Image 1 (cartoon, rainbow, N blue to C red):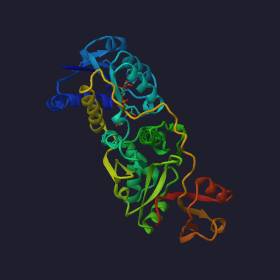
Image 2 (cartoon, protein in one colour):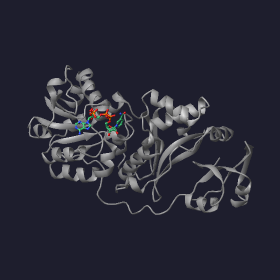
Image 3 (tube, rainbow, N blue to C red):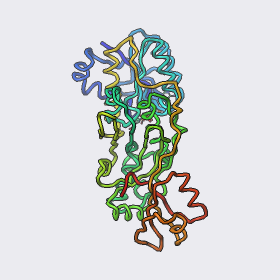
Image 4 (cartoon, rainbow, N blue to C red):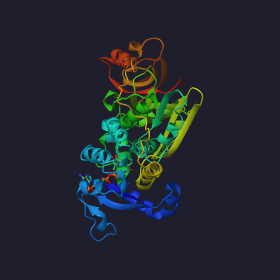
Amino acid sequence: MIDIAILGCGTVGGGVAELLETNCEQVKAAAGDEVRVKYILDIRDFKGTKYENLVVNDINIIVNDPDIKIICETMGGKEPACSYSKLALEHGISVCTSNKELVDFYGAELSEIAKKNNCSYLFEASVGGGTPLLRTLKTLRHEKIDKVMGILNGTCNYILTKMKYENMELADALKIAQDKGYAERNPDADILGYDTARKIAILASLVSGKRVHYESVKCEGITKIDKLDFKYAEMLNANIKLLGVYNQGYEVIVAPFLIPNSNALYGVNEAYNAILFHGNMLSDAMIYGSGAGRYPTASAVVSDVVELAHNLNKFIYNGLSLELNNDIKAERKFKFLVRAAGQDALSAFGNNITELESINSQCAFITEAMTGAEFDAKAAGLDIKNKIRILEAI
Ligand SMILES: NC(=O)c1ccc[n+]([C@@H]2O[C@H](COP(=O)([O-])OP(=O)(O)OC[C@H]3O[C@@H](n4cnc5c(N)ncnc54)[C@H](OP(=O)(O)O)[C@@H]3O)[C@@H](O)[C@H]2O)c1
């Protein structure tokens, strides 16, 4: 019997408890032993539920119980998740988490603590929810992975899908996403791109082998996208998606992109996530799946529990490093689709533009490839309504 504790029994943590019950036979076969939830630590007391007798309020009860070998941290946020994880690892208890904020902020330090104490810190569920991404990347350590890009936020993808296929404005699509429980009441972390930035920072750190901080990711959200952008996208046989993009040696960015219909990310709709990566020998590969949700995310957490069960009292290399990534120097050039009021913008962007049909008295054009900084310099003083990077030549 392997006893575990769940810290934070909400959407994901509650899903972990349920999964361990519903799939107990499969989990036992996979882990090589029965996995039992011995403790739940939560603010709520779960009075009148089957979890009532498992609830404790003091982390010390959990870490001082020699039966506990694995902790699932699914409470989210920096504190107390960070202190509790650290304490568990110092007691030789492995931790797995869905908490991307903590992985990005302190994951490398927690991994060092795990190493010193012969236990592990795993975080499959922190990027891509149920999409089996990190474990797949781990099997590709023999590759030189120079590119990772993906649709990493289900809420934004759902909103953009509604805008494209149901001709909605962003505010209306966001309202539906909130009513369906995809978006939080405060959706800023999703629509401003911060959630995607955390995830691409973790991915960039893993594939480069050096730490890329979330704060260093250049981040634009989807708030300026409107129906007109989708009209132009349709003219160009393209779709609009919020992408996190890592290209080796270039600044990591999060921004809306025009995706041509020849690209596999074009048709990734609804709340799904998809991540494309390129290895020097592997060439291109894509992983697609449910980016969030109670059961898909719980499934990813339990996949870590299974791996930890096979490696009790051992350190599993997780790809995080304390060494900072200083190789990222340049800003990658992209072509931009531009909408602007008046005709001044056409001349400001020079001769190498491709002009598009004017709609609602706005001019629209595609620029030559340039960096965001070069774009801003040319756009100074102009009434630019929106600009969207283009993933590859259209
Ligand atoms: N939901 C998803 O689909 C999803 C997908 C991927 C990753 N994640 C990540 O997984 C983590 C958890 O997300 P979630 O959606 O499951 O959140 P949630 O539903 O709010 O669950 C968090 C649980 O932890 C409890 N908690 C919070 N602070 C606590 C504290 N100081 N002491 C004890 N218990 C505490 C909460 O109690 P109260 O409810 O009483 O506050 C709640 O039961 C987050 O980092 C999130 O980003 C979530």
